[in-house]
Length: 59
Image (cartoon, rainbow, N blue to C red; front, side, top):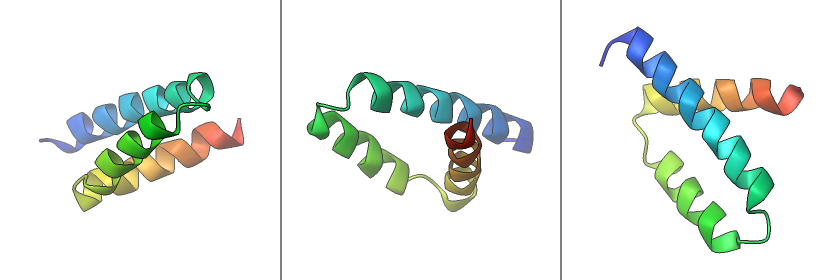
């Protein structure tokens, strides 16, 4: 996976995660599943995801 592909993937994942958290806040099982998947991401993708998520949270 190229750096551009990793960046695009982490951006899309971050945006979707924000939507899931907003729309499914009452569904803890769904959030737990997403959190488990994110924790299993390769470190470079996970760090990009966390960076994007941080940027989205600041908005």
